[in-house]
Image 1 (spheres, rainbow, N blue to C red):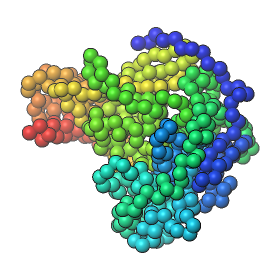
Image 2: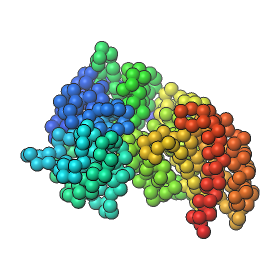
Image 3: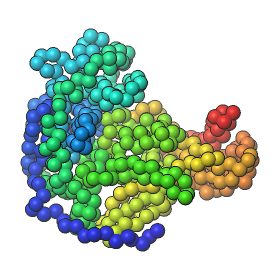
Image 4: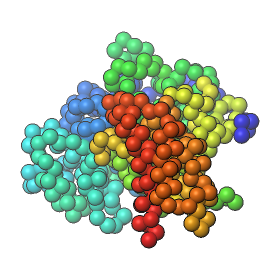
Length: 499
């Protein structure tokens, strides 16, 4: 559908918007005005608050040394969730109305928190540079695990933290010891701050200031109507949600943004809902849903994506990185795109003219070129889950298992009619300037028997259909071989799974 559904007009930023950031740091309420509102959270904590336990090494969200805990005010009656995030790639204006806890805020009255004491007792530190980040990841993971039961996969939960001294064994031992202790964070910081913070999160911001001699502005609307109005009135404003990619570019001096359109406080776009329709069961994913949110929904409704989603960055990235951001970034190796191609996802775009829908395979026009007008925002993604008789396989190939960008991605979805393939959807990433819907490969599968020979022939069709490049992550020949082998891999995995 290309026609717009009309939308109501909304005012652009005006004088009634709040002009400063309010947050809590280790239980103390802080107000920040002017240029400091545009600092990264780590720079604010270290340079303005003197909380130098928060370390900065990579400034890319890869090492976890800058890990802090951040909680948004929960809905009334719920408990605040303090989640570990990378503070080096989070802007201060994005944590307005939030509570930030640093490593200095864990101990109380001279008594170390369990995560700190466990690292001491288990000798989990050598040079010590990474230690505060590990401690915060331990404390945040233990806090988030309360009430969920079962053990904690510490290898997975600490994948966002790097250490070059200990070899991790002593750190894992410390993690197990800390996990057996009471939830220190919830006791340390009761929800006194939440009532005011809920009100703050419902207010829109229009921030202005000068940082390093540069005039900056950030508009942070509280409603979608306001956001699309700002988008139309200020097309130069750079939308930002999770900032897991834009924060890196900013730190490296490669993003000359002067006006930010902060989407992080929009209500209702952070949900993942199940939708039943005559076409089958689907998911409706708000563009601001984080990878933690989406992964949680997939554990129940799309388990095939769980191994891919669980390796999407580290927990610190997944807690803030958004599904919508992964799509509009326009990368042909975005981890989410093969799934969305295979599930025939439809994107809902909003502008002052209303909303329109675009199928995912028509959204990418070329490398970093999207069917997204200058006044439009991605707001929702609708995808159709596999039904009875359908099989779905997803592949990500990268040099490292964790915290690595893909070399090659793929999705294969089939519907069988007896021993023959009735329909097929195949999508590859990393083989061209966009994710490629492999129409020729699909034709080589449909109507043919579900045999190894069919998939070998389809592999030949796939190789003929792509023109991959050679780059630092792999050669063109390597990608061609992957394009062929991934189909046989899918076949053998399905045979084993349904034996």
